[in-house]
Image (cartoon, rainbow, N blue to C red):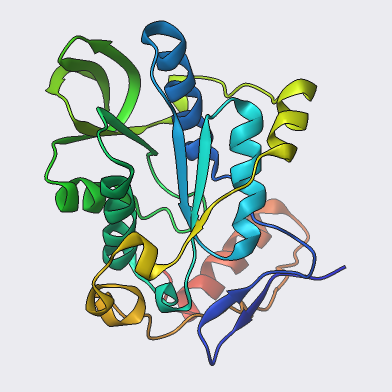
Length: 250
């Protein structure tokens, strides 16, 4: 069984062999929100992912849940992208799809937890965005959302088109049905490269990244354990206090 590994020279996480990517948990909440909106008011749900070819498995899962179409953005030029260059490619793909009213993203990635890409997408699209939302309701030309706060939530009406990031409080993602899984297996996932998306080569991957990873490693913790002995609790407490004073902890 392979363990979690990092290539410290290339500064990248090495996926274990034969293990395909899965959908980010918060993105599942976004998919569920999109499907509920489609059920309520109609429309079409398209899932877009930028990544390696193995990401088609995650897109197949989205299709099995009920998404109408999945698109993979894959090109060697996209390698080593940061949040900004990733957001740029995704935004350009959204523009290529055509008219849209609402872009839904998970509130953050389950691994890096940065929550930067969605806001970047909105900036490149030139549309308003609302983050950490627990409820999304289309109301004509606006979308009414409940945005989570530390001590409650606020209600906002946002003009469409707009982008909303969905939190896990919003819903419980549905499980794919057998019928959905079989239908997804028959669908082909189109793969768009840099030329097909129509991106500026200077703004993608490492070339377009505004940040650089200087070190990526698995932290190693070393420590020693020292036992304090004594005949009575009082004696042990006194010895512990003296030892902590020696170490300048107290």
